[in-house]
Amino acid sequence: MGNKLFYQDPYIQSFSSKVIVQRKDENGNNYIVLEQTAFYPTGGGQPHDVGTIENSKVLIVEEVEGEVRHYLEKELDDVNAAVQGVIDWDRRFDYMQQHAGQHIVSAAFEQLFGYKTVGFHLGNEIVTIDLDTENLLESEAARAEELSNQIIIENRLIETKWVTEEELAHYNLRKETKVKENIRLVIIPNFDYNGCGGTHPKATGEVQAIKILDWERQKKKTRVQFVCGNRVIKQLGQKHKVLMELTKLLNAPEKEMQQAVSRLLENGKNAEKKLEQSLETILQYEAKSLLAKMEKKIVSKVFQNKSIQELQKLARMIIEKEEEAIVLFVSHNEDRLQLVCARGSAEKRSMKKVMGNVLPFINGKGGGSDSFAQGGGEAVISGEQMLKHLVDLIE
Image (cartoon, rainbow, N blue to C red; front, side):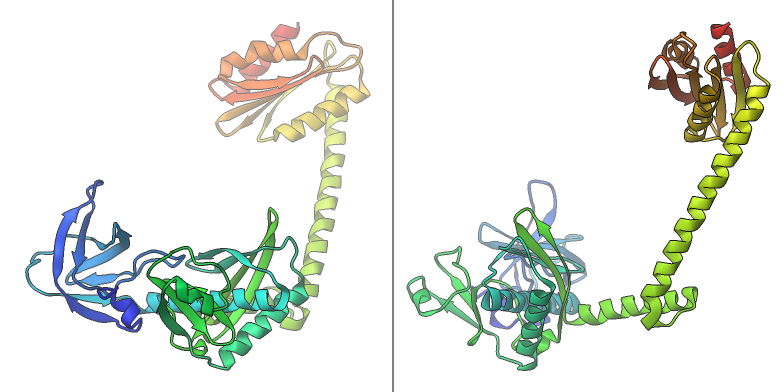
């Protein structure tokens, strides 16, 4: 572990080293291996570091067969001289905060309620843990968050220690370690003892704050979402900005925001209901007007930009009023034709067959029953031409 500088000191932001090898992997991606490195490779739930080595960006860092590979944007010009590496410190410290925060939150849930952490993901925006419980109460989440932030306020030391498998018996570990050698413990004295290979700050105070955002049931577990450190400040800023914009749009103070949104939604529902009623009235009037123009029991028309739902509703109104009617509707909607064929209860001709005979003219698809069918396709012919095909088939 001597060549992994991030274990000696996770606060190292720049370093010098020699290049051992520069080569390409099996996929043709260029990488180098250094004599020593401060770049943390992906592992233990923590994403890799990024930064630069000389004049090349470090894109990915992985440990493969015991060597830490630094995948670079471009090859280095001189691999014989010492190279300078620089860590993206903002990213590194963010992950240090989140990872230490995860230890604290997981320990809090286990100490308070016995809920063990069985899954963990450190994302770019949020951190999640999967708790071994099907249900999580709001009061439980609040207590775990309160204890977590109390541990932060106390600014307890975060210690790291390399131990043997035999020495593990001296520690009350939160979970069993997966490795049997090179075992690294991350310890918050009298609170959490856990095997971990990630990077962490030197004290809990540097985590700054922890905020649980939400949780949901995942199969028989509960997935908890939270943020730590600078992400708490960022989330607060984003949410405050949205809230301020809403107060202006709704002309309501922050404390009355919930009532204002509820009123807005209720007004929207009422307006939508009135609009539906108005549309119903218009369609009823239109159905009556079309029935008055019925010839040879056929009610037919070409519409512009009428939805298939409106065509269907209008057709049903007509065949409910006139049991001998046959309805043939075509609507030209941009570059498509929509068709509806319907019959009253006294008529026996199959609308499904009629639809099947005309759909090939427009490379269309459709379906339905003998009494009511619908379809659509490309507007390669006009709506009037399509209606003529339909009328000719009926006549």
